[in-house]
Image (cartoon, rainbow, N blue to C red; front, side, top):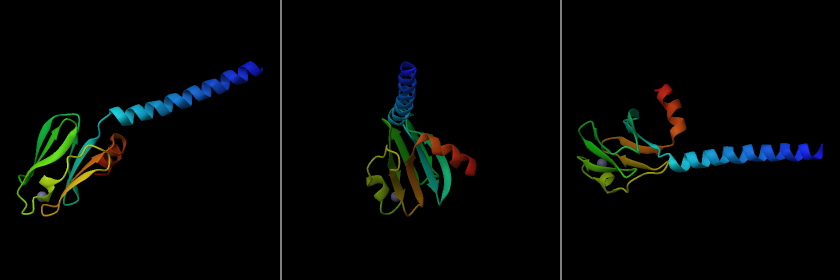
Length: 118
Ligand SMILES: [Zn+2]
């Protein structure tokens, strides 16, 4: 009887640890996505794991390289967005105020909800 209790506790602990480990690994290894919004509307969602260059309506160019996204070109007068650091972590963003462009990194799971809402 007691032995079974221990087994049960052990099993529960094992499941708890593997679930935590799964979430941890998923968060750590899976690169997020870059969401580009223009004037509050979603312009596109792009994978950070894919090397690519994205033309944002002819005014800005976003480059994804080595799992990081940065604004490589912009026709805005201040060019603040071009000088912002490359982003790669959930919640980081690059904003181009004159062109009303917001580029932000988002984790994988919430994007689905966003996609449905849009
Ligand atoms: Zn700008």
